Length: 451
Image (cartoon, rainbow, N blue to C red; front, side):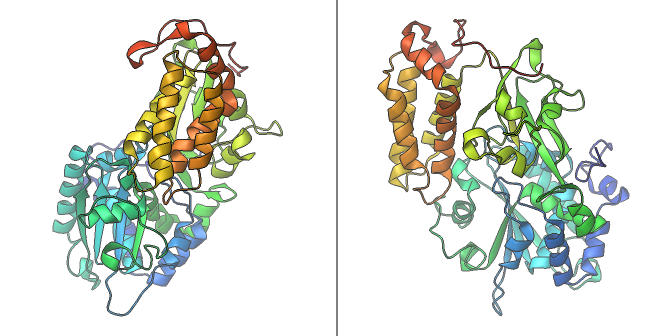
């Protein structure tokens, strides 16, 4: 594994505070960027191949190049720190432990984009993190790295931290902008896209926390060197939030050529499955991506090791693959009940649907009801096909991706674990009360794994 790019100073005592961050090279890259032209910075970001780290993986430099620049109209950078995808907590880690890295990234990015007022939209549950960010912003301003005429460059920038109300839907960029404007967080119809008509009708770029933080090492080592770190279109490094039935949950910075097997079982990362149990399945990119069984998780269709990158994880489409998504890596051991967990996710997405689109508003409710029925031992054999039909009619038929996020876990659970659904229906005595797991017979022998 190469040198860490984002977390290289994470273990330095006091790195959260300006003086320590500055003494360890902090803001050197901002000073370097302020001496470059905005076109030069944009070209470095394009050359780097940096893809959005919030889930979609869209090329960041390309997204920035779409920003409209009408004469006399302000432009804005909005940092999406909502991070409401279940299983994902790497942005929180960055903001809590090394907030000045994000602020330096915002400074460089805002300068490139011509934004003089930028925003951090942070989920309401991260109240203590918002306080840390506000403290760090005050430190940076006092030291002359924010405010008027930054370091004598003639460039002005203010950063505003806006706390959200705790809605999952506000992770979608246009719903986030609606909320930032003081409205209900409903996604907008597109076009127009935010790059043309975003916050208050002004050209706006919305990027994830990790994406903006990654701009700092890009300026430090150069876009070409950054692009050479990785595999194919998966360049640089990636933060992964690892949780579930593993020995060492936490946030890890990985290279994209790391195999999934090594990430789960090596002591450097997750340290294997907890309590000596076997790997059953994994949701590698946050709750909205398809769950995959162990055999498909560890190898691709040609038998080669599956890697922790965008292309390898999605190889074979949803029939055999999944998505890297936001990097929320949720590991399930042999005792985990797929039906129960699918029901839990369905309840979440039904609750978080904004209700604007009828396929999502009605469909998420239907999926929750059907899964509840199966989970509680009252299911019928026809329910599985009905569930499949409902999710199919949600996917691709909504304004924003929440409908897809609700449908994909259900589809993947049926595709790969249909026998568990059938077992629940054929064995109603397996009723699990109070949404907890009981000691009942395993629905089938666990699939083959490497450990």
